[in-house]
View (cartoon, rainbow, N blue to C red):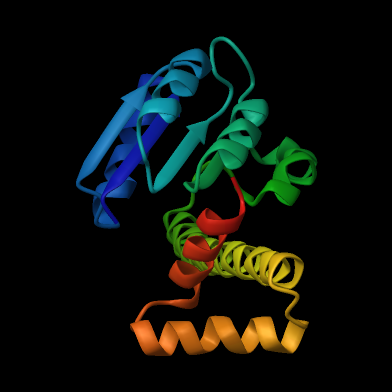
Length: 189
């Protein structure tokens, strides 16, 4: 819990949210007053949490929350009037945005913060796992291309090509990926 961004058109609302975030342990809090500034800041910074106090001077704020959800891994809390909070929640809920009604209840805000933090942690874990799986798939594709090259040029069967790559990797103390790359550099020009 370190970097947070507050987007609020109201100075009073901004101060209230700053105090709530400080009480939750956030130390580096940036604050801005409109959606267009927020869009520029999101592109160049990696915030853990974004709190949007609606309405903003240049837009309502729900479009901004959706854009941030799609462009970053930040947790997002959208604060809006209680009479429209259900309607706004329906619009942004599928994007992982947590809606908190005004007036802000300290307990509800803290619970929402914990929920957003837990969701963000889970999302980051899934993202890390996804990167790992994509790397593994790329490695498998590379090895399969090397097998195909061995089958085409040396007339190996698939099991022979597989065994050759495995044996080369063990004998030369290289990874199967490194062996596959050397095979491909030899046969694919």
